[in-house]
Length: 153
Image (tube, rainbow, N blue to C red):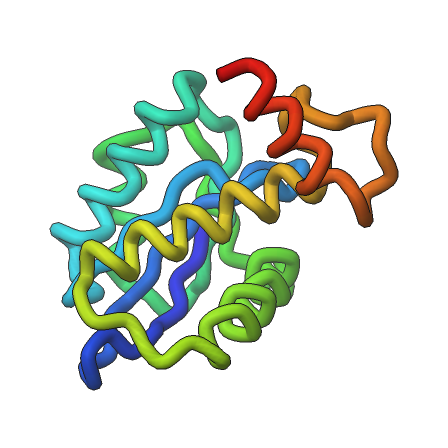
């Protein structure tokens, strides 16, 4: 789990993202604040989406609210804050920022939530985390998956 920030209508917003051990984005939350309430809301949503209790949670050591929230929600999980433990998700922020840069900006928090969740879906699809277009090379996976979805509908 990690957070980054994006500009929404000229104001900075925090984007919380949860990623599992295989690189699949589990949940995304856009928040106006980076406090205990936002962290609790995000962790609760991510844990209900995941439907299993994690044994290890890797977060950024800079956020002082995470240990308290994690001890309340998942007391059995090991809270891992080693220096380079969250590098995979930190590197994944650049993919999101690269996609948002050419856009003319996000106007509302709802739009930001929708766009960033959609970006996470496409990243998961491209990485082969869903059973869509698994027999197609990664370069053509998104187009083949949407063709499969269109046939199913």
